[in-house]
Image (cartoon, rainbow, N blue to C red):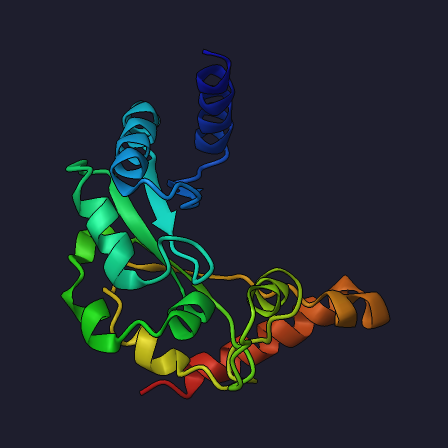
Length: 191
């Protein structure tokens, strides 16, 4: 199968670069089939030392933490997990108590960013914020500290902060410095 060969080449490239996870997206409305596909990806990834993480998005049929947990649980694969993105967690209405109920081994990685407190009311607005205009941690209205303090200690924290407008105005180095400095301030403020 052509797609399996392509996926295997991606897994090999990721493993050779030291990756630990492959991030997948939930663009299948049949959750049983999505679980099967996720499990198949995890099986392919296992020999490379990789896990398959499913990220949830409010504009999909896997819009929140509760739904993604059901899809992941249905795989019964030990190397499957959930990628928690602070933006999607906030926009989906997922709760901190739900986050605390997720098995620790399912939470190996999180994407962190901030966004304005006012949530978009359209899919276009959600997509625009997610793909083009996020804020550095601590510069918006997401309670990042509440999410981070409920993640297991082993969770790898990564930044996903696209800022297209500012990058166009000031350049990528200035944006990277702003995100770096804001992240350090945000982390320092967490008790």
